[in-house]
Image 1 (cartoon, rainbow, N blue to C red):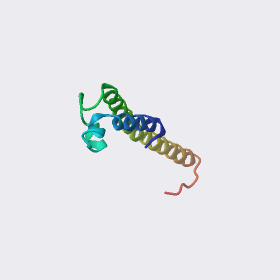
Image 2: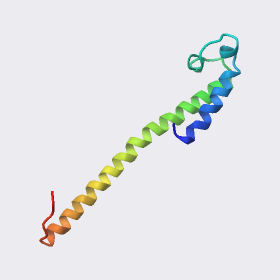
Image 3: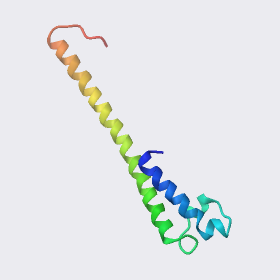
Image 4: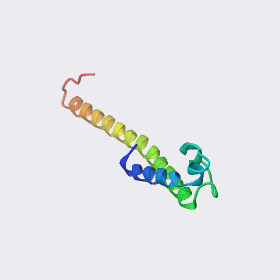
Length: 93
């Protein structure tokens, strides 16, 4: 897990550990994290939504980041090959 979401995850676990869902009903954290009020507080619901949005944002960002890197590498390779071809140099394939 990325550091930017880790703090939110920690806060969510703390919040859930103080909820009736965990303390009174003895239900697992994962199960309680899916609940709404009154089983968990509105603070926990807000933390959960913020945490999930954080994770969702990272999931969308990384594939795009790698796609940009791949495109840049292809452009560099094409430019390198074209420059050597124009100079009459042999390019390894």
